[in-house]
Length: 374
Image (cartoon, rainbow, N blue to C red):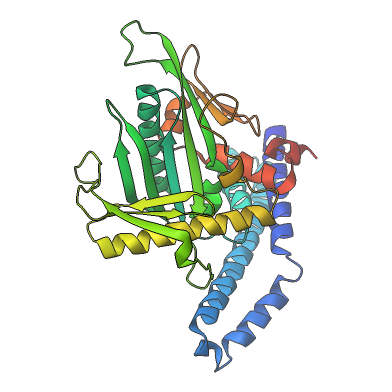
């Protein structure tokens, strides 16, 4: 077996090792037996919320076992094919098996990352907020670029994206925008994006074509499930209605129904500008509860970005990632040192590499490359 192919095999085995650890492969069959016994309990659906959680947990275990066994079996099958092809000097069989191993390595690496998404709220839908920072018109334009980037990323994942509110910039772009992104593990993937994002480029708004630096902040909060109780004291909130000030068009409503909720103890402000005022109250209250829940998650785990308290202003010294378009092309995450020169791909939503490196760092304390070397 060629050295390059052997290296691919070792990568797959390392991914399998991590998948096995996260699955706890030795006890998985026994846990599935326990799930199956509980599913047969005739009183299970007396508590629909608990039953639904049990069914989701069981299906998650079934899927994880199938993924592990599938990759393990496919790896061995292709190793056997290569050895057989080499013995019979059948180069076509060897080439096909090597190509299958390369594809399997990519699949295993992706499943490895997904296996890390086992935090308390990782599987939840998520709220994504984007706010322009230092830089005026430049920052507003940068905020709109980031909004497009995340929408593109979510669409590639097959997620549903709902615009909750938007405030247009005075000359270009947006001052702020809030989205609800729905899909399995939406929060788990996006939680690493909370922080300040820095852009360096030749300004399209500068007649002298000078290089400008812009900042925009991103904040991510899990959508709180109905079975998670978050109490909000009515005396702690102020509810205001106003006319939405968005730019209009198919994504932004300009009605008198917009709702703003201010939470006095934390200073959190959430808004929603759908057509129905009743709907806006419900959306804004859910967003507030999600923000409060995020604070609780931050308190429980030092590995999670303390978004609310430590995100800092959108300016120098607080950035988590730099996007340099001039004088060279580079996107670099300052937490993991993961970098890529494919700036166009990143701005078109190819974010899994950046997200995955941060996810691996949060779980292990090491970059993905360091973890694979150890």
